[in-house]
Image (cartoon, rainbow, N blue to C red):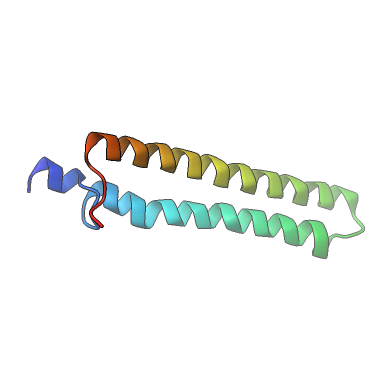
Length: 89
């Protein structure tokens, strides 16, 4: 196995595993945090202002996590395509 095959961004390389498994998993976790915040804020604790504040924090952290993840993922893919290690489509 050559270095390019090991690092390559197909479905078998390290970058491919990160792109197809790890990034979607982290994005899903950030989305679950966001949804949990929405449920807490609007549905479960409508009258308790402290719990609503906690739900608002979960919403904020979920959105921040998704924005940071998408930004970094986009920058990494831009770097990979610039270096010529872009995924084969």
